[in-house]
Image (cartoon, rainbow, N blue to C red; front, side, top):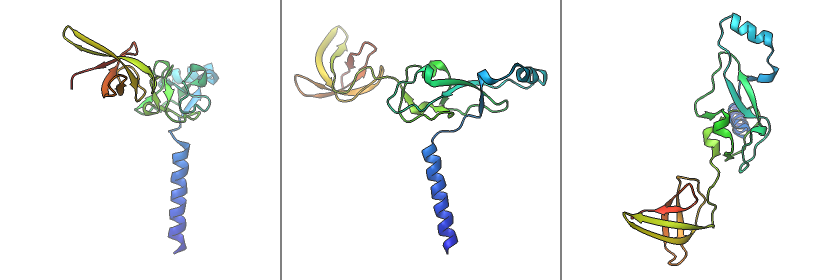
Length: 178
């Protein structure tokens, strides 16, 4: 009877450890530590050179902006490919915000990063309704943060009515007829 309980507790502990560790390790070697003779051996043996990816070099905490200085470039071991759904290039990562803790040596899932907020919660913004030649503008307070293209809720400062609108690139909100 003690064996199943012990085995079950072991499995739970192992699962908890895996969840806390988070992410999938990158099977890689640092790009700058790769020797020229190793590269020559790969070329001579007709093995494809490993894919170059970016992974955190230090812990990046939730809400922190991902800077290129916090990342290191590594070359995946030949034969290993990055999994789908991970961000590995500078263009995908520069200036993004971490949604959860990003650990050193692990791939960065696309779901773990987001665009920086263009409008913060509680900010006063201009709201526009445009229909044909008619344009109506008002001042509103955002009820949630949002990036360009996000659909967020705002409260009209004059009437108190809650509206849904799209965050525009200039930080204004465009609402449509509902």
